[in-house]
Image 1 (cartoon, rainbow, N blue to C red):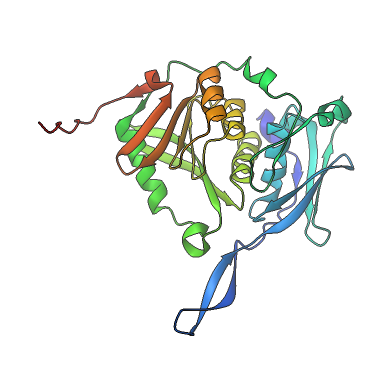
Image 2: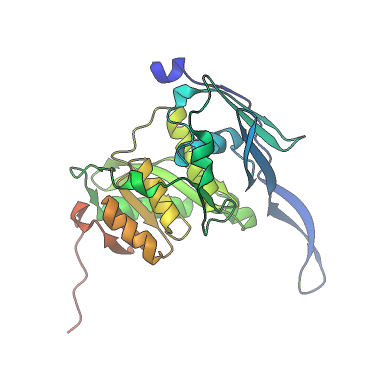
Length: 285
């Protein structure tokens, strides 16, 4: 009830995800082809310019909220009064109820990251990682993981239409051998997609402590930090990871799985949360 009462005023300014253009194949034939959108969106917090994000524009309000959450520039959804997106000016104005204390100090330290579509982190987020405590009483069975990977593969996505985007999913276990995709977000940058999910979680008061986060992108330090901030214990990618991403996952106690495809995966950290329930293939003599 409290989350609904304090829900900020939001515009509904989603852009079309794809646009059709003319392309010519190897035979010189014109082929109408869908391509992904990409739009600059400058984020303002209480009239102060923060950053310009390159985004698909599919969920701009959630993206702005999740960005502020994951950069720790705003402490709770209750602090936000309104989020207004105006594509004519390519801007998103976020208004807080009482202003943000220490905003100048938080913005003073910026770290350029490998994130596509963003690339900047504010403040010393590693200090917060030292305080993160994730649940150790939750488990993920291999059958549930494989079911999630298959459902993501079958999911109707913008990527299948146009390529050029990353996708992220928030999921939960739904039975001894199944998982449910709660939301799936795509954007031109994987960090935009994870921030949009973080924003939706705040808006809908979703607890991440027993959830699974899936991404098509590589697991860099920033991706792992954001997963830890959302208190999500399971992080899964069909791609690989970086050395710093691995180190932070170990420090935060995240169960991190990479190269997840079909019935294959590599568990890099937190294997104690995994439950092997399916018969294992017999090794060849």
